[in-house]
Amino acid sequence: MSRSLFTITRGDGPLVATAIHNGHAVRKEIAEMLLIGDKDMFREEDPYTGELTAVASSRIISNISRFEVDLNRPREKAVYRTPEESWGLKVWKREISDDIISRSLVRYDAFYSGVRELLAGLESRYGKFVVFDLHSYNYHRQGPLEEPADPKYNPEINIGTGSMDRDRWAPAVDRVVHELAEADFLNRKLDVRENVKFRGGYFPAWIHENFPLSGCAIAIECKKTFMDEWTGMIFKDRFDALQAALQKAADGVIEELRGQPF
Image 1 (cartoon, one colour):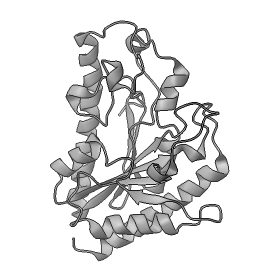
Image 2 (cartoon, rainbow, N blue to C red):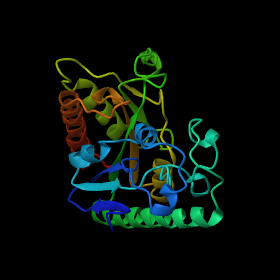
Image 3 (cartoon, rainbow, N blue to C red):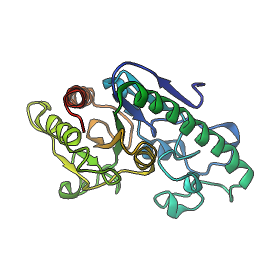
Image 4 (spheres, helix red, strand yellow):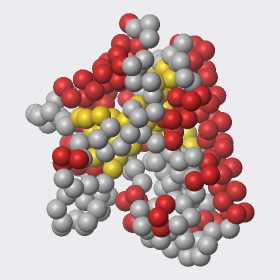
């Protein structure tokens, strides 16, 4: 598929890592309609998550900004129309037309068609598969010099399992949580909790609906402690440590899949 839309890499093994909010690109007619600034867009996207997908040999990386079409929302809500749908941000200079929305949804449909093809192939080959649905989230929303969000409600890694049959996939999910929580993160442990900040969006729910017996999609939301969410600057030591922790979880869940009938 064209890099202007998304990139799908087909590898070996039953694990796929995805970065569906990684993208920053919009097509020309969308750019001409945008009121929101480039920096505000970038802050609400999930930069660098595309690089985190290297933990799996099969990868899906979106190159489209969520401000053109949000792949983690149902089709009818995938294009933000009002500030209420986009964290209070005013996205458009004027009301966006149905024709423009329709052209954005062509990209949405192409994405889900490509995902379906990839996952059906994994189902056929391995019988079951796991998707690491990788995201990042802001915790300094009030400003770079203001107090960060309360860590009680904002773990460093939030594992979202809200749409899955949790009992069925307990061995895989528990292994992921265990490996992340026990990883060496710059000589300390990460705060890893389940369904505290996020329960997972539409994308994992779509996977569970379409591959109910074979697909386990785990939403992994990483707090943006690995970067400055206001400037976009990456903290390479923290980023590398996060990627190492995710690699440990990826290796562990593959081992778990091979040893469990589910």
